Image (tube, rainbow, N blue to C red; front, side, top):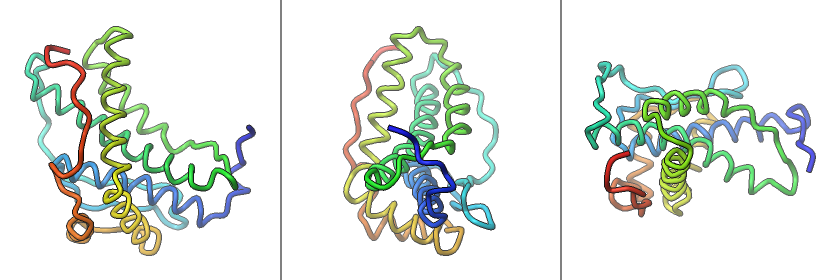
Length: 192
């Protein structure tokens, strides 16, 4: 199948895709207790965006400590959540468009940098990424989460930004909270 050139996809469809991408990041970041300030689309057209976090002190992580390894895994899950949410959006439009998605380059570079901290072999790396992808998918593709992502994305599409209070209200309205969504079991109980 041939990818649909971006200029052949209406601006509002592409803008909604970016809004869904950022909504996926924001939702999963909040579920992971990250201090999200807002999700925003960049003017004038909203064809790029970001999820903004409150400044946090730099962490010194010890990869021999399970909790510290989970900090990195959670960051990867949050980055993957935007991609998974956006891919789900495009899947619904597959009969009309097959976009060449270029919005993941920054996320992919950050994931690569985070993954490199573990210094894993190919098999363990595949296990880690499989686990993180599965966890992000279960969080993002849950019916309640999808309803929340759609509402967040609609607000982003209309206003170019959504603040923390509104994000919290949407998650509460759709009953999306830590512990209420089923996630993947970690593939290894021992060391990474």
